[in-house]
Length: 232
Ligand SMILES: Cc1cc2nc3c(=O)[nH]c(=O)nc-3n(C[C@H](O)[C@H](O)[C@H](O)COP(=O)(O)O)c2cc1C
Image 1: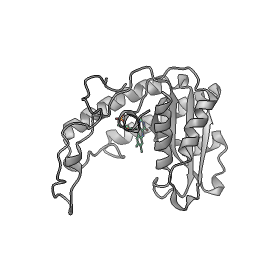
Image 2: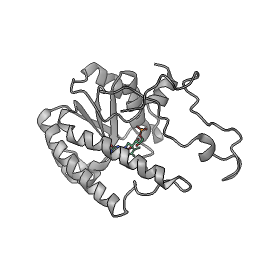
Image 3: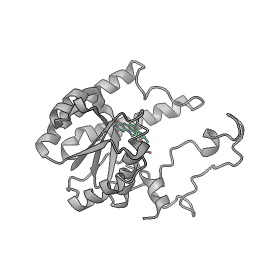
């Protein structure tokens, strides 16, 4: 797959088919992930794949509880999802949050059918900087395999229980950085068009100075976006 296609269409796919992801596909996804940059090449990362149905059932319950907690934070004006970026339109943000919640509800309600969970652990990940390149590489590599998923962090609300269920050696310093739900999507891949354009979020030679070029539409695909559906 063309690298630009992967970059532009790796959306969060919450509606997944229950078919398992073959082991050789999983191997290619993780083999690409471990090529990612990381400080000092210390590679202090560990990936736990979960495909045991009983265990997924336990995580399903935990996921719903953790999510309820997250949305309670949101309702009371706390947590990372509350504030849009400075200058962004609050009404657009509210609409985005409504859509994410709807799509997230689907995932939560169908969690038992997700074929694969991928828990990502790191030691001292520098606020995520040292692990997110690998996580994003995994999602891009998955995209190239036709596998979609969602990067989630809500299980941080139930971190201790996750560690217990997976037998994580926390005394060595391992901390969960993210949990990916992975599977073959039900819907179509679409362009990540719901982003503020480059010239609104970039400056040149000083904060707030014009970037110098306007990008009113995504620059991929080169011949327009008409043939790409919205993501599911
Ligand atoms: C650090 C991080 C945490 C996220 N946590 C969650 C999550 O817990 N649940 C979820 O459904 N999506 C989660 N997402 C996915 C975002 O909601 C998603 O990237 C955003 O809405 C844009 O959607 P798109 O990538 O499909 O265009 C997370 C993304 C990031 C980068």
